[in-house]
Image (cartoon, helix red, strand yellow):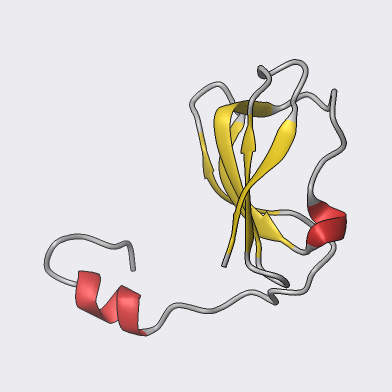
Length: 86
């Protein structure tokens, strides 16, 4: 069953969670280009600088310690820097 305005409550209530301490980066949103825009994982999942495939402004939530990272580079050469700590 696909989500639409008539059944969105059902889908929101029955969402399946993902492990927050995974060392695998979990993508939440991608652009049409295929570049990641929003993702989460633990500190080991944050990509090394110069990795390709992450849009400028991409946000990564490091769920283990509550840090938020932003890509200040470009799609071909990422540069993730911590924005805040919760």
